[in-house]
Length: 610
Figure (tube, rainbow, N blue to C red):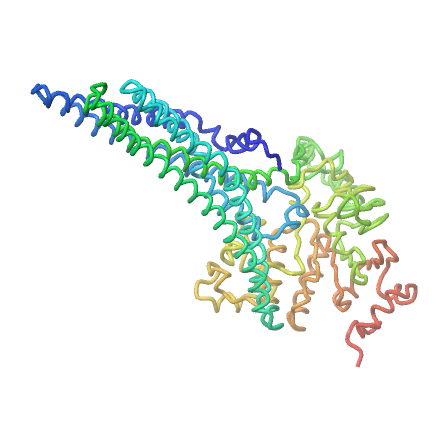
């Protein structure tokens, strides 16, 4: 990370730049309030002079009252303006980071612990609030107040000014020496907070595994190691801040003592009026305000810069680029909606049927000599894969762990881009489609089947938010979840966090969501791994029904779920080893035969061998 402050400051300024007009208003109000504050000691001098000369006090006292109330009103307006601005800066930053996370590629997001990413949106943006919204204003205003105070003090007495400047210079040197260490400590503390969030989030997700292995204390110590490191760096920053504040306070108080001594001597010599000395002392007491403001805002700026850099790291995440939308492409003969309308209007049903038949001849998905890896220096997970997925029917992909089955799905879903070869949808290369266009044609049931935050209805409506309640109930019945939903107090509107759904129920919710989407291609990754025999049979009936009208692609280690597939693809070491029907592969492929034997599946019926 560059040690230069200018590039780092520009990162922080990028968050404040969209609100520069509001910042300018806040700065103007701050300067007005400061000017009113700077005028008060001078007016106080006039009050004292009036007392000495028996003049009327009405005007100077009235002026003091006006300065008080106007200054209070201006300060109140400024605080509201900058406070609201701080919240808008935080909201903009959070919106930017959340959008970036959800638009990033899957490998980019899964590379970092989830909890660490969450801290970018939560705690880092909070640190950004004061730095981006008020620190710039505070620094300028504090500098103006400091210079203004010194100028007016010089107007009162140059000798006392020299004494004051010497004290202020010492304070400035102390801050210049201590601030870099404060910034570094705060940055390291925040980095450990991010690590703590990542480890804690992962541990809570795996809480059952942690408890079964009696690892509560070990994981606690691992999590608290980052907490302790963050606290240690935080304490280091506090110590430096405390030293800086002590030096500032002591410096100003020493200046006051020196001013009293030198001022008393000058009053005795007749070179300074008592009212002038009192006014000078008031400026000296008030000098703490700009010094405090400068030091506080420099500290906040350091924390904000560290937070801004962590937040801006999200911008480096590669995103899924949007290409021109291709919609749901057809063959050239069907590409123009106008032609379809004319055909329908002329009732040329036979010609339409011929065009539809020609469309059916084109595979819905095709992989041509595809090679892919999860990184530039990583061995390919799949090599030279050729695969054709027809528009209707059930294709099963089997093979030992590490064969490349899940990578195949990642390519189809465009979570991963190939390093060689190409994928085609409806005969057109993937590069001609946007990610959204491709995924609109697919539905995917993951092996781990997580549920998204929200209700059961929210989870089902992810792919088809316009679906009716009747449609939801129909797919829930298809996957045998009707009884479960009826037993929930709020039915479809029950939050899944409180519904106590089992792993098998989560799988069926995911399958119901996929069926509701009516996709062209249904992708199932071990979608029945957690189901009992009766429920699995019902789900398999859904799969067979879906295969009659669209494409179904299944990954399974339980071969009993794929023996009836139209085509079984056997993968090994990232390559397609063999393909065919169950009976054919039992005869022709030893790996498939070994897989069947290892799972004790009947070669004919798929029932367990007894």
